[in-house]
Length: 101
Image (tube, rainbow, N blue to C red; front, side):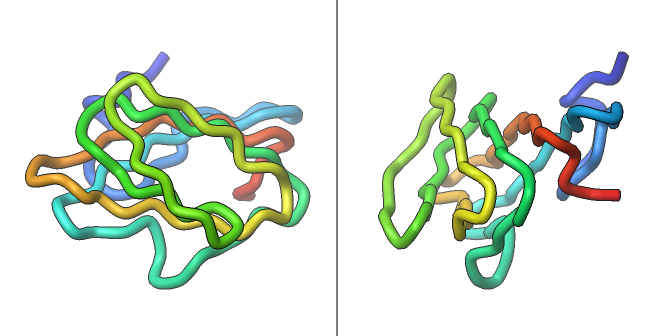
């Protein structure tokens, strides 16, 4: 078992099994998950905001996410998350199958 809050800053893989993978991501104000939208060609991603506010860019559409909000990003879909708030943002994600080896 791993605490999302003790995983550290940035993007961290928490656990990986043959069928799924969990990760945490901490973003400082103005920081983004990537420079430009990225994709996971074979993995769906479910992302939940645990703290803060994000702007989610998914397939060119933008939406604000706040604490408790969740989104599913289907495999192959371009996406990017940006901390739009003044406090750090913390997320928890599950990838199925694992996106990172």
